[in-house]
Image (cartoon, rainbow, N blue to C red; front, side):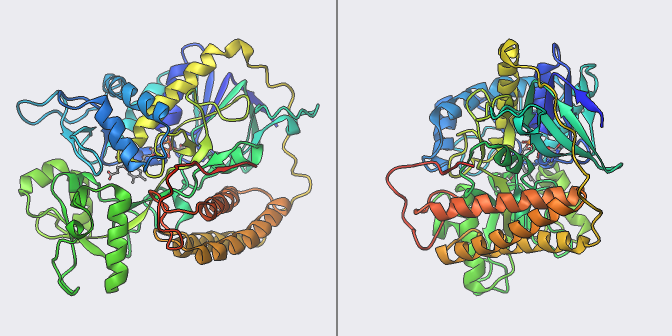
Length: 535
Ligand code: FAD
Ligand code: SIN
C-alpha cells in the first residue's frame, strides 16, 4: 500500500476545506480528499447567502447581538466577535476569487444587494440569486485546481484518523499523523500521512430521515474525531429548517429563508380549519422572521394540532418579475413539479438542516488532539450556541478555514514528522454477502431519530432512541470487524456513532434552550452551559 505523504491533509472539499487549502498552498503541499465528487458537500447546495456587516447603519455589535440572541446565550462571545469582525474581509476575498454577488438594485445601498433572513435585525446577507453556495463552491474549486501545490482527490472516503496506536512504535500521545481512506472505484485502502490534518467534513444532517442536506452529511468527521479521542460538544442542537419542500418525489429541496425575508408568509392550507390563516403572528411578534427554532416549532405545532401534511409558504403577492429575479432556481425547480410560485403557494415542512454541535475547537481551529485541526460544520467553535443564526455557517467556514491554516503555518517547526505508520490490515475480513444489513440499519437509524429525537422531545422517547442506538452500534461494529470496508459501511458506522452522541447529549440537558426543546424540562435554566462529551 502506498503511503501518500503531504505537508497537510485536508478531509473535505467544501467551503472550509478549500479555504484552508488556499491559505496553505503557497508554501505547503496540500492534499484535499472528498468522499464523492468535489462539489457534493452542503456548500454547493447553500441558497440564501452569507451574513456580513456591509452597509452604513449596520454594526458589528448588532450582528454579534443577533447571533447571541439566536444562540440562546450559549455562544462563546470571543468566537462570535472573531467571526463577525472577519466577515467583510471574507466576502471581499470571495469577490476577488470571482464570486458574482448580486449587485445593489437601487440608490442608497452599498455595492452588493443585501437580503434579509430570520433573526437578523438588519439586511446583511450577500447572495448570488438563490444559489449562493454553488457560485462559492465553483470559485473556490477553480482557484484550488489552478494551484500547483493543491492535489484534489475525489472518491476517497476517509475511514479513520491515524494516531500513535497505528504506528510501529506505539505512542499514546494522541497525535494525529494522517488518515486511512477508501479509494471507492478500486476498493483499496490508501494511507495519507502529514504533519497536520484538517477535518472539514461538514455536518450530520442525514442522521435524520428528512433532511435538506446532501447524502454525504453522515457525521464522518465527528465520528472519526470521537474515535480518535477528541471531545465533542452540543450535539443535541440539530437545526430544523422551517421550510423544506413537501413533495413525495423530491424529498430534500430547500425553500430559502430569504423568501420569508423578502415578504413570503406562512399560512394554513385551504383544507385546514381556518384555511388561509397567517399563523406566525400567533406565535411570535417577529412572525415569519423569528429565529428558525421558533418558526420550525410553530409549523410542527400546527401540523400536529391539525393533522396536516404541510403548511403553505406564499410569495405570490409579490410582482412576478421580482420573484423571477430573486428566486430563479426555486422558480425553475418548482415549475418542473407543476407549482408556479408566482401564482400559488408552496407546500412546506420542517426538515433537519444543520448540525450546530461538533468537534470542540479553539479560536485557531485546534482540536484536543495534537496535529488535528477542524473547520466548518464539523466543529463546535462557540459561534452558534444553541441555535445557528441564518447564513452564519458559510462564514464560519471561511474564518476558521483560514484560522486553522494560519496556525499550522505559524507552528510549522513544532509539528513533528508523522513517522512510520502501519498498513491497513484486511487479513481477517471477507466480502459481505449481507449488504441488506447496511441498507436496513441506515433506514432504521434515520427513522427512529426522526420519530424520537425530533423538534419536540421527551425523556421517554430519548431513552427509547438510546436503547436502539446501543443495539445497532453493537451490530454495526460486529459487521465492521468482519467484512471488507465499503463506502456505505463507512457512513453507516459514522451515522450510528453520531446518532449516539446526539441522543446522549439530549438526555443530559435538563432544560429547553434554543433547538433543544423537551416537554419534560420546558424551562430554560439561568446558567448556559455547553454539553461536552469526553471519549
Ligand atoms: P461541506 O460543504 O458539507 O463539505 C464537506 C466535505 O467533506 C465534502 O467535500 C465531502 O465529500 C467531504 N467528506 C465528508 N466525509 C468525508 C469522508 N469520510 N472522507 C472524505 N471526505 C469526506 N449556510 C449559510 O451560511 N448560508 C446558506 O444560504 C446556507 N444554505 C444552505 C442550504 C442547504 C440546502 C444546506 C444543506 C445547507 C445550507 N447552509 C447554508 C449550511 C452550509 O451550506 C454548510 O454549513 C456549509 O456549506 C458546510 O461547509 P463545510 O465546508 O463545513 O462542509
Ligand atoms: C436558507 O437559504 O434558508 C439557508 C440559509 C442558512 O442555512 O443559513
